[in-house]
Image (cartoon, rainbow, N blue to C red):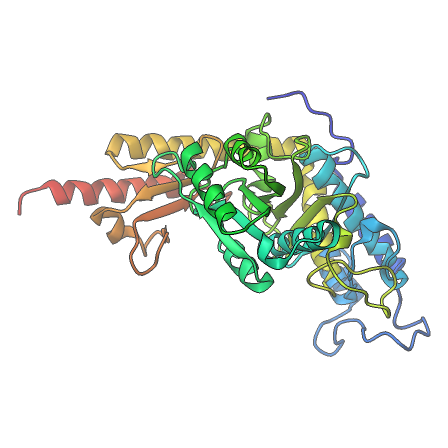
Length: 420
């Protein structure tokens, strides 16, 4: 474990967390006392969602939900809607924690916002780079493409489709889940032969199905060999709150100057509410996304527009409650549980893939696993024709639960071997 210094992220007491959220909300508009007539917003419906002070006294997230702050825009740029400036400050601190203390960028050198999820954050990156190439380099739409591995999340297909971009996916080895230099090179060469000059490259920091991690060097070599212009986005929607703590010397962060943007997703390993994806990019890039919204103070360069400030507050609360060292400890525990599971599967002769820094174990389909699929909620790669099933070792996935699965799996294997 490297000796890390955390400059923005520190553990806070529950009292501190409550006071900071309460102060932030108090600096927002008060719809009951302020004579603001032009906003199409209010607190949540008081007849349905109680604003009783005793009920909400020790529940800062619920209080934020009821107060309903709108976090439209990207607050790290500076000017935003002043009516919700109090809680905008909390989101700005969250973005700095993620960018500086987790993803190793210099302070105040990133922009970002809390998106609706990892899918939106990935599309935000593709949108931003598409516009960068057209605005700054006078590229035509047909000149631009998206390059990623076949294991990449389906949001790459979705984003390319929405943005009118061609998608090129290089194959990966079924054992290592990595793309070979030859495969990457041939994919880039095919794109170049089809007229592509500008590449939006997606590198995976733990894929959704396998927990696999892309190697950047073969991709960079291929791009440079073919004299390609490119921007690199890291999809850390799954791994962003995990992989930087299990592999502290990894290259998929802002210390790597080749990387311009990163997606994180707090609704996975951060255990935040759904709707808490995080988009981060180096200063000077996000303005290429979006169009002018003159009735909104400041510029909205986000894909989503209006969004709940309560979700940003929830992620900030979680990180503040744990602090960085407890986060490291929790990641270590999950790694050890995953190690235990892998050892048991090896003893049973079950084939599986696992990146050594990941808590995802993807097992090759067999009859025994088919029988246990529903009982243990094993997730297939294809619901119609599965070739593998995955287990994600999260906090609720205890050794006791894993042991029950292993016991049942062993029983299925033994029964299958017994003569009829």
